[in-house]
Amino acid sequence: MFAKLEGIERKYVALERELSSPDVFGDQERYRKLTMAHSHLGEVVKIFREYKDLERAIRDSQELLGDPDPEIQDLAKAEIQEMQDRLPALESELKVLLLPTDPMDEKNIILEIRAGTGGEEAALFAADLFRMYSRYAEAKSWKVEMMHTSETGTGGFKEVIANIEGDRVYSRLKYESGIHRVQRVPATESQGRIHTSAVTVAILPEAEDVDVEIAPEDLRIDVFRSSGPGGQSVNTTDSAIRVTHIPTGLVVSCQDEKSQHKNKSKALKVLRSRLLQFERDKQQREEAESRRAQVGTGDRSGRIRTYNFPQGRLTDHRVHLTLYRLEEVLQGDLDEVIEALAGHFQAEALKQQAEEA
Image 1: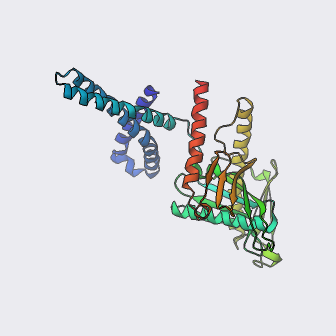
Image 2 (image 1 turned 135 degrees about the vertical axis):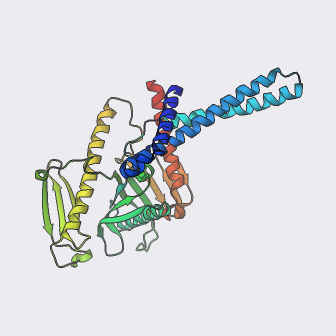
Image 3 (image 1 turned 90 degrees about the vertical axis):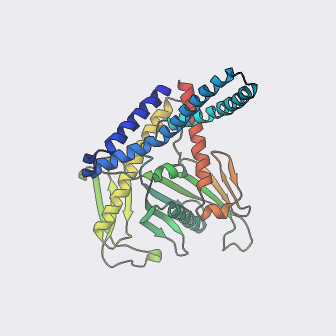
């Protein structure tokens, strides 16, 4: 591990030298890539240098153990013990930082939320979840762009798709994929009975042209007239787009824009991200067959979280996390949940790394 860390530090120093060269400023794309690489290594190097400084300080204090003054010896022993107690925590932090990173972590995302079982109540909760993620994005200074909506007449969403751009969006939200279950008394329920509904959330890393190549002959593009809730006309031109990827059968529709060209562009962006996730899921399934369990994949196949309104409780079933501050979470205060999930999957990855060593 420490030989690897020395190599990372050397690379970090080399990047610092390169960034200080006047030639770099003339090439903005190169400068951007170097800055990103430098920043990525910075946290590892910072902790590694702290670890080395601590080891050096321990060695210096050990020399004082031979001092003829008993008080200085006692002081040195206390300092050595204190510093040695800090070493394991730094070593653990370094092990986490050296875990293989998900190459998608730096990417923006396509957020897809769909109402499942529960009819109108599920659609209303889909709208609640979209507001939750939008407020979280706002707190992180991320940009949210609507891609497609299918609304109900009461303010709910049968489906909502959005593009979220910002710093490491996928790394923060990738564990949100799955079935979100809500338990509450609907506004239309006169008997006060609790209903259970479900909503599916998919977090897709935004695909760029270099990530996914789509052959024009693999696409079927249909144009139709947009319609809103209750069949009312959104506009009077045939601007809505439906794109079908023939090899996989994936279908994306977009009608939010009045421009056919803009709808097509948005639909293709969503399709590329779905195809990228399709390939990632396929690869993960293949890897899962050769090892005991998947690690850190944000499995979308089952229920991941329950939102219980009568008790004001949120439970994430993957990490056995229960919080009694549901309202704050739905207002976008998601950090505690996300940190717990990230910590859990890091621990799983460390465990697997130790088993494979």
